[in-house]
Image (cartoon, rainbow, N blue to C red; front, side, top):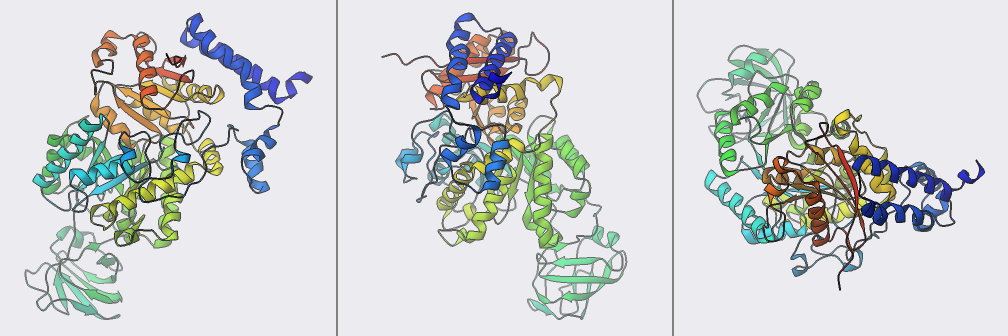
Length: 607
């Protein structure tokens, strides 16, 4: 019909249908319905579209080439971001974090208040994972890093001892108590380190074309040979196999080999010193991803209560199951570090078995050609988005900031590309662990995240990215995302005990913040890694929050969940008086999965 051709009429019909749909599904009371959907559906067309068509609506907000205009017009969500690019200073602002005003930060002009139609909102959706080390292990430095934007702290067990790591965990938990917040902890297991032995007279230099022997003899090495105390390597070698020493600085090719030796020829010359690492990129080694040290470290992690555990040098899905069996099912979330070509061959099975993936580009870049790493990084990120599990991009992201207060342009571009691809988190290694400018590194990464997430092109990519095909138990999740967008809700709120509903909403890459309420502290901490999720432990402050037993499944009362959602959204600055929230969750009396969808209006401010 002619009247349906205008954007105003179409929007009115669509929003009316959405209102009826949500009302039937969630059994809203008449008062809730009249306060939220009815009034919104009447006024939305005039405020959302006005008299402009879709193209002019985009042109009004941002000037872009014609190609991107066409892409934007074709996107599902036509609300452009309101956040303007800003000049960053020493420390990025985190308005969602109390006490952020006490430190130097970005200009407040882009951070104050919360426009529900804005993107990315009052907190960044891409998470920051920072490694703790000598430069950042004190409570004061951890506090500065958290205020600057860190969501999850990584403890690297390749360095330090259990006493030192326990002190770091205690400091992080003290930080949680001080700010009544949720902070995740990732314990990174060292994994099997394959190294050559010692040299009699110090480092040697191997010339191209020279012969060099690796063997099991317990004697110091020289210019002709060195000990390689790893029989599993010799068993896997065949003539023609390549060996990389010292992170690929020296390359050898096997000419002849046996059970306890390998005669090689130097292909890439270089200096070799004792205890340098050995990589065998072309062979799947018959070794476990867990050493005896790793097994002890894993149990230590369970004892101190870490939330995530990263397994290094994973080659196959069975490596993940070995760790899970060792620590106990459900005790910790497991992240597989992809740093060996063998893992790429078995990636589908690994992704199915694990809880999250880290693209560990350091060792992966040694065993693959450098030009292959960006291709595999993008494939891995896209696959994990499709299966709906977190993916972290790590290693050398802001490497120059170990010694410099500013990054190179190429490093900033590298971080931005990972964000554009849709990574859940980006990680700092030595930059925050041992660098001279750990806070500046976090601030820089936060600034890059905000700049990318404020870009219309990023929004288009998230809208058009891979998504899980909804199943019966989670069919309500895409509906919640679409409903939040079309009624211009300030946030999506879910109540989750095990984190599955929140993670599923995260995978939808909604432009609205996802407030995940959980009465399980472990679940809330684990969700700190998930894109766009603002986890809240509902029992963290008994004086201000509804207690866990009041909203548990054993004594389920969704009206109390709604009141808690209003309370948290208001106190955290994620919604203001009169704003709308989309609330979803699981009612144990209904079908399995997310089976509740309600639209709730924030109460007016009482004067």
